[in-house]
Image (cartoon, rainbow, N blue to C red; front, side, top):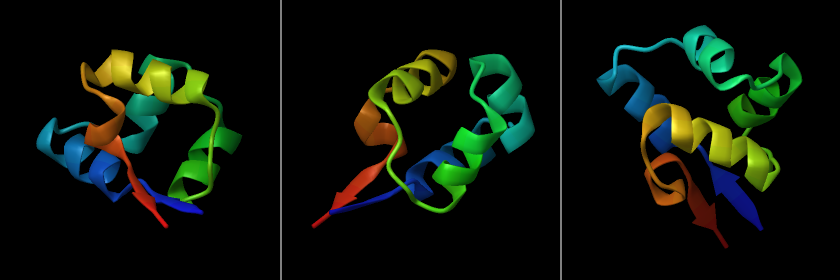
Length: 66
């Protein structure tokens, strides 16, 4: 099981937002941002914070790769 957060990075570019901006606005820890950059799984509450900050759904920021 793997995940890809490429959609998240593309969405940030579309919204003209940096990864640091996302981290600050959503309250996500630097360690969690590292996990996201490495396409490692994170907790759902982290995805909730990101989706709330970006006004989007899970499917808008990640893909499941079987």
